[in-house]
Length: 171
View (cartoon, one colour):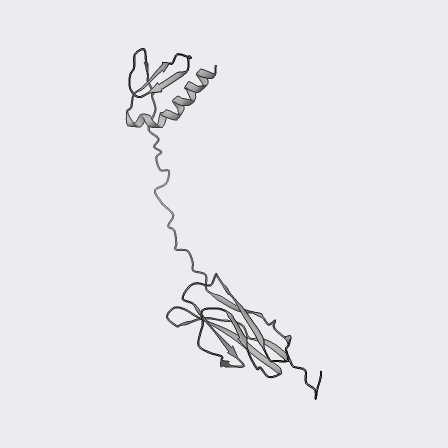
């Protein structure tokens, strides 16, 4: 029974190869195990496989056209400091971080605008450290530029408040 099952499995596996017009021969070895070969040997029997080509006719002549995938526009946002949040630092240092979606790509550059004035030239990362910022309200915005220097995205304005304790006014 196992030999018959093996033979049937082998024949089913070999059906696709029939398209190549190969001949298959089967013999038994000394232990009675079936041996399959593509060359005839003494006492081998040829197996005749009949199969149809694996071809299917099309049911429709109208192929759907594939529109090119829409390119998702870049978005940039400031993640630190939080909008309307308070930063407490007596040295006036503020750490600014941004997030760009989809993933930041090579060649893109980010510029930070502080209180309406660009901080520096665009750079290839979305993290900045501000030094000696005066106490009070400040507005931040990030600008994203492509490889050619064209502005492609601007973050919403983030407002934060810097609290610097002083001897005159400790609050």
